[in-house]
Amino acid sequence: MRLFPALLTALALSVTATSAAANNPPVGASYEVWVEQETASESENGSGSSQSNSARQVTILADGPDGQTIVYDLPPDTTEKDRARTWQWPAKIVYAADGTARLLEREAHEARLTDWLKLANWTREVCGQWIFTWNAFYIECDPDAVIEDATAYKLPPADLAVGVMFARNGTVAPVPLVERALDDGRVVLEADMVLDPDYVRAEMVESDLIVAQIMGNPLTPDEAKAAHADDVIAGTITVQFDLTAAPDEWVRKDVTQMTVDEGEGDIETRKATRVTTWTRTN
Image 1 (cartoon, rainbow, N blue to C red):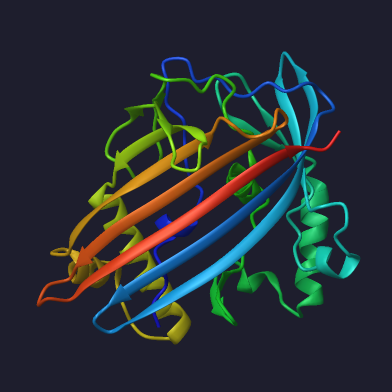
Image 2: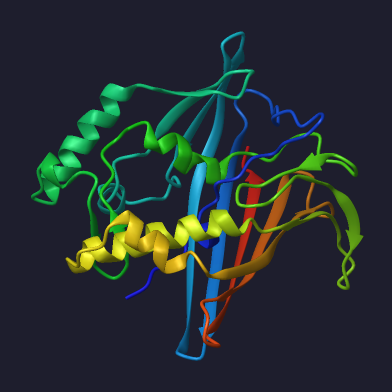
């Protein structure tokens, strides 16, 4: 059993720019955010692939001296049964001008968490553990963790433009956005960044430790680090923002490609594509 590194599936990202302020849509504006993802890996030992998608409703609740308050929730047509499968949403988060975020209404999250654990016949002793059903699943019980989860659905920066410096976690350094015309006629702003091998190596170590926990196999962090110390890792992360989408729509595409050489000719290629679409609904 091997987990696809979190780098390829997480949306942990940041925009670092000489002028990269947060998007500032009007109070009351609501957006449907749709995320589609495909991952694939191939080596001499075989190949694998996966597909997934998720959606959230994002509403600008307030904008004032304390910052911008945004509500993230499941889509309006979510059934009560499906809503009961998770406890994190809705989440009301305040973003201060300095970029820090704070979760509001923690009591509501704690109450939903209690109900969620009860429905699964679990106690809080399972919190922080990994289990495997059809996929690896982390039992999260910290309400503040939803702040990071919500990052996947945040609106893109308002002042994306040619020359603005752009960065993403897992890359070596920020790069300036450039304009690129695609073969299908669309025009995009693009950032083509070099993958940070140490970041990927740390993700692989974490993946091995998670698998060991799930399988009940003994593995120390030092042993996991030693197993990947000599891996040769190279790759890129390319991010595109579509400039030709509808006026009330943004489209972003992230493509991660890498090779991992574990020695003795065992070279694995990995690719992940994530497309995020924000559509104004009111």
